[in-house]
Image (cartoon, rainbow, N blue to C red; front, top):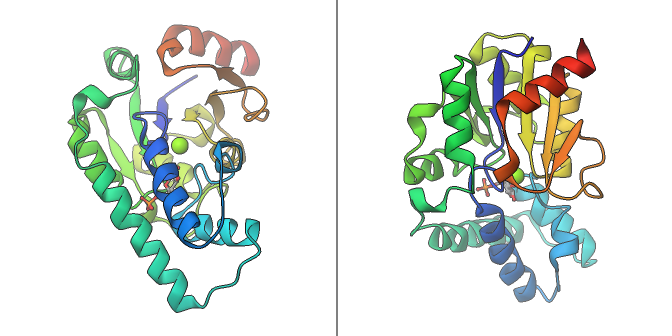
Length: 220
Ligand code: BG6
Ligand code: MG
């Protein structure tokens, strides 16, 4: 039986995944490394410093800790500039209706984000009131694909892990949901999100009744 739905933020609630990519692409270029959207799949859901480390490994480049701090901070400044103008119209299609559907049947709603900007983004989108809990990168030790952020969200909601549905656009996030013992809904391409229990091409197709039928079919 399903008791809660736990959302990823970037790329699920709103398209900030694109802004993370644009900011990293600029920083990578400054470092003489060219990244593209295919490589970017490996950065989705991954924390700030881990993302920089993956870019450096990809470009065969070494930096000192101090230099890494500099570039990570610079990326965040650029990212914050890019998201300055976002508002309620930037919610991805179907998301607000889906949140309302969950509310209407009395299930709990959590946010499990790897981003330290999660609270700011939720506030800009004006959807904070839908969430019973928000767990962001500042509240956990290990970043996705570790399940910690999803486990913490379920604990805050006071529901068993196995009664949660997690929604993710990133491979690292889908792994985290499965490691947490939850049902994983992936949004994106089947080829990127092979470990998800179901994959939908767009947030527009998120409908609670249908998903619950599939969950109950596979677990019941
Ligand atoms: C995740 C994004 O939600 O947050 C990643 O998918 C990002 O792309 C990570 O790197 C960390 O975000 P921030 O805002 O703390 O740099
Ligand atoms: Mg995401």
